[in-house]
Image (cartoon, rainbow, N blue to C red; front, side, top):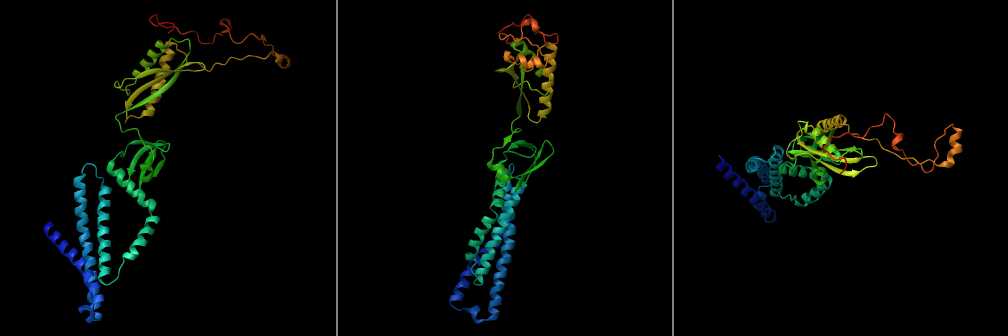
Length: 339
């Protein structure tokens, strides 16, 4: 059957290419069709119609054959919409070619029309064609796929559908985002599920009086209590900064990329707070040292305020601690008091 279709297609294509030449020759040198008058014109238009219809059927079979070969060659990466686009593009290309040849058979040259029309359509549908081409690239390369969690233009969400023109993303607040494929191809896209694991981190401050090895071990204990935290890569805790009232610890840990990361992040924060409370480790409030100007004495006395206006007094001493303030951390003897 394929051999018959191939031979028929070769015959139709050869016939269609020869007829315009003969028609052009008959226009310049009157021949048989011209001598037949109106009947000759009917025959000429009949031949043109036969050519056009033949190209329609020929385009259908060639498009199907091309799509099957494309799908067979790219069986693991070919998306169904890409295959469909290849099939339709092949079909319409052959049909348009058949129309040009059919009109040339009756002496009508369409090449001067196709050029300006093509340019006009190109400008009019520039964005549409750009998005479709970008969609083909996305569906063929498969840098990201449905159910991947991505971030683009500060929009975070999960891919729900990829079409030829747009990509649908559902944000975690339930909003549906329709993103043109050209933007997906030209902008930076962060794919959080491309790898098997994803690293999360939290920052927590501890009081300057807290022995850091004790605080680090306590935080590590809290992290390891969460079953969603993987053992390899292992969690790590770094001392990152001297804050105004605390030393900052950064807790880093890994989870599987398909896990609901925001839930695990919340659970680890709660676990660290719970373990710190058990261990007597303080997460301090911001501390400010105020120096009172003695020249404001008269103003303060107007409000019946009588503070100690000793200019040399710049902060609290050990005797100034109130009963509700946090006492120094009591740590096991295995941890040094200072580093």
